[in-house]
Amino acid sequence: MHQEIQSEVVIIGSGPAGYSAAFRCADLGLETVLIEHQERLGGVCLNVGCIPSKSLLHIAKIIKDASELSESGVFFNKPIIDIKKINNWKEKIIKKLTTGLSNMGEKRKVRIVQGKALFNTDHSVLVKNKKNDFTIFFKHAIIATGSKPIKIPSLPNEDNRIWNSTDALSLKSIPNRFLIIGGGIIGLEMATIYSALGSKVDIVDRFNAFLPSVDKDITDIYIKSIKKRFKLLLNTHVKSVEKSKDNDLIVKIAEENSDENVCCYDNILVAIGRSPNVDFLGLEKIGLKLNESGFIEINQQLKTNISHIYAIGDVTGFPMLAHKAVQQAHIAAEVISGKKHYFEPKVIPSVAYTDPEIAWVGLSEKEAENNDIDYEVSLFPWSASGRAHASNCTLGMTKLIFNKNTNKIIGGSIIGTNASELISEIGLAIEMGSDAEDISLTIHPHPTLSESISLASEVFQGTITDLLNLKKSLLN
Ligand SMILES: Cc1cc2nc3c(=O)[nH]c(=O)nc-3n(C[C@H](O)[C@H](O)[C@H](O)COP(=O)(O)OP(=O)(O)OC[C@H]3O[C@@H](n4cnc5c(N)ncnc54)[C@H](O)[C@@H]3O)c2cc1C
Ligand SMILES: NC(=O)c1ccc[n+]([C@@H]2O[C@H](COP(=O)([O-])OP(=O)(O)OC[C@H]3O[C@@H](n4cnc5c(N)ncnc54)[C@H](O)[C@@H]3O)[C@@H](O)[C@H]2O)c1
Image (cartoon, rainbow, N blue to C red; front, side, top):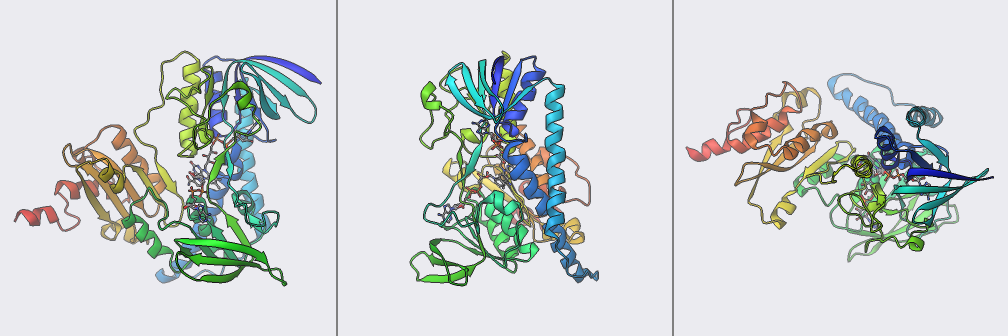
């Protein structure tokens, strides 16, 4: 059956970008239609990204913490891993959240249409599903179609032992020998999960450094902490993947300017980045412009070159993060409703939910240097934190970067337990234009890991008493 729908706003894609835009539009009184290709709302983040990965990382952390507790005199037996039960538990979490989204959409009177959208004109889209097809006319449209994993064409991708992140999160099996190609956030998080579940994991990355936005002193701490758990091979290429007679995956791997090594694996995860979902949307037909990297080009009001069509989330480029997508969504909805708002955050935090976690926000040292900023780094090692000793995480480090001329904080990174939760204080301080004194005079509760942020500010100010005061000794 064919149906025609008239709407003020049509939103394509129901990930963090799409559902947030739809709900904000509805709350602002706009008649809203949300189109989603999949059966469930929530996009990559809820279904096959942020939430399932963090659920499995939660399990991985408990397994590791439990085994390390033997050093404190508490002994657990080796864990029994029931994949089916883990998957059911994970599925329940996802279902609860995605059902919550559907209910919130319904309460807000957002019309949800299931099917794949294709622009017909610059004021209408066609949507088809198994039962119906629709023509939806709109005054404004928001494209929030997200991204998909990049494949390596030379691999035998039809072999179901070669996984992408969705396969890895579906926890089909726990490989004995697991190769991860790509040492980015996905590769590192999956290595954390699978090594805790018992796989022998190797990660290869073709570049010399991993997490390029993080300073080396922080990534060096990470490398030290993972040494006993898995191998991270940098500057290394996968030359070929073949099947052996006994059905192993035989992989030829070579470090730059070195001979090839031949290794056997049960499964391979390819995690070398993601590309925007811009194909089959009919964008050429309406003349919508992509940038050189293939993402949709937008301005600070999230408008594309067709001013009543907006784009938000992963489809607009880096950083590809859910919290960026949600902020963009709110701004796009507000602009459509007539507000003069702009997407202009000073900083967007990033987190690798590895063990230990790594979180960073604002400028790195490299970036401060490249911007010719006269900066000073201030470090607080967690080996000087009572709480870190009590919580067995003394390897951690809090690093702040200050502008020496203004004393204002311009960046920071944290490695250690709960870095993902701690980093927001630094983000807020940068957004508020705080200086070192603002941070160090804000009384932090003791004993907490959050104290490390005010203590690192005290290091900068030369008022620290929890460490030797190097600035004071220089004065004497
Ligand atoms: C394994 C993994 C872990 C991650 N962990 C984190 C994390 O911890 N924190 C974080 O911030 N980010 C994380 N991310 C990234 C995060 O998932 C994305 O940044 C986020 O989902 C982007 O939201 P989005 O709404 O732009 O797109 P998506 O979530 O990709 O949603 C796009 C939606 O559009 C739909 N769609 C596409 N084309 C059409 C069409 N033509 N018609 C109708 N519907 C269509 C898709 O089906 C999809 O549901 C992770 C990603 C992965 C893969
Ligand atoms: N915690 C989080 O916020 C989180 C978690 C997962 C994913 N994500 C998002 O998902 C996106 C995709 O993640 P990702 O890890 O796939 O991409 P990524 O861009 O973070 O990392 C890809 C890595 O693969 C390497 N690489 C590229 N081609 C290679 C090749 N041929 N051989 C070996 N190595 C190669 C790169 O050097 C890089 O280190 C990221 O942009 C990230 O923002 C975020």
